[in-house]
Amino acid sequence: MVAPLRVGVLAYPGCFASEVFGVPDLLTMASHIAVPQDSPYEVSILSPRRRVVASGNAAIAVVPVRQVDVLVVPGFELHPGLDLDATLASLGPEIAAIRAASRSGAALVSLCVGAFLLADAGLLDGRASTTSWLFAGRLADRCPGTDVRPEELVVTDSGVTTTGAFSAMYDFALGLVREHNGSRVARATARVALVDDARSSQAPYVDADLLPATGSEFSQGVKRRLDQNMHERYDLGSLAATFHVSTRSLLRRFRAETGQTPLGYLQAARVRRAKHLLETTDRTVAGVAAEVGYRDPGTFSALFTRLTGQRPGDYRATFKAPAEPTS
Image (cartoon, rainbow, N blue to C red; front, side):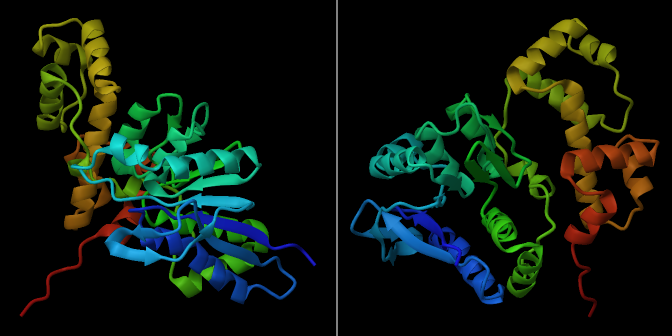
């Protein structure tokens, strides 16, 4: 008989209670669907503390930290007023437990902003990672040694797995089921749980209005110019002349302040506008393309797909707002 896969979830003060139980619950469903000889899961909620109160003042029963094959680290509420340094400093026992699990050979998994605990444990340096798209920039600033990929749902690099925002925990859990019980059980589990098992990216869900502004007065001025004229053909020389700098200076200053090129920003801005039009209007894809500055719908569709992970028509099918009922 195959030994059960030992999965531990590391609970800690203030963690999201739903992320503590989300992966175990999906694994429980998979165990019921799997045929008897398939490998079951042995799941435990672990903590170096005797008592854990999670988000929503929910008390969670825990057992002492023990040897596991997979250690899952849930996320927490990273709101604007939170002192992140103080929060992570208060989680010293958990970060020590994460390091110990890594040394023992356990696979490490973070859910959403649980990646910040892995970063403070030193486990993301030299590895690719992801987290909630909303906080990807903050993770990159805090842990410059990691290659943060904000568009990815699940990233695994050398035994360390990180996931995107909140519900990406289910993408990880389904991947675990697929690995240990096969595609049939993973598909059936997804159907029973009403979980999408065909997602490939966080990008379609990104709302640029929620992202923190980057850059100084110069780059903000360039952005405004590009936003106001996004339907026009991109001309680097003309753009530089508007701001009385050389093209080389424009590129250098804009990248230094924002981490991207003006063209890269413009393409992303055009896609943001296109997403809004696809969600709120019935314009054809060609009409949307023209609205945001592309005469060739094929070129627009290729860019949209590259930046969002979905074709324009698929994006509209997923996110278009329902029509208001008529009285």
